[in-house]
Length: 214
Image (tube, rainbow, N blue to C red; front, side, top):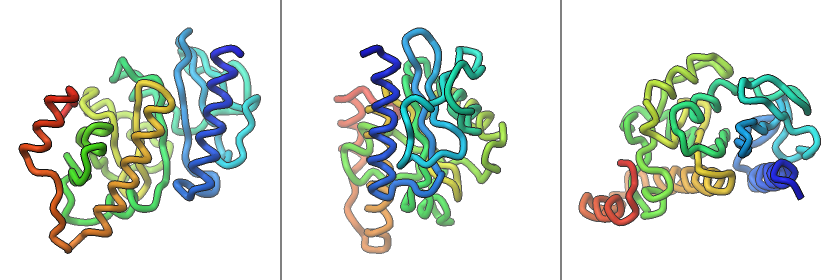
């Protein structure tokens, strides 16, 4: 099995799992991954993550021109901004997951670090999560906002829209974005309950031990 064939199948498998568990719905969400030759695989525009076909996944060259498959997601610039600013990025996942979107709309969250440090794995897999302002879907300003972070964040949440996470490979990006959604859910469930999150010293220990960008 070639690298591209396996990656196509993994994209479809992960996307269906996320769709089936309600992490994104309808024709929302998209996934991309970079191949070792510098080309990209991306989910097609207007497609449902629950019903993708490996042969129809978009294959783009390094200049983002379509080589084969269906036309790609309109969020190409958003994905490409992560690849361009974080050299280690091997995949990007974008969802419209309910709890992350809900948290992004609350008035009193810190846009520079919108996800409270409630569990060690949210810190380890995500670092600080930036909330970006509302931008029209597909607008190149989304990519500009990500580039403005200068590669300092692997995870952002587009206000009123959804999370986007870059990872070293497809599975790492998928695990991280699921951690983001679960932590957002925990944050909403414990909101107003004076829950004890991680202390500053506990976060510092995690950052040192696991060499996390913080």
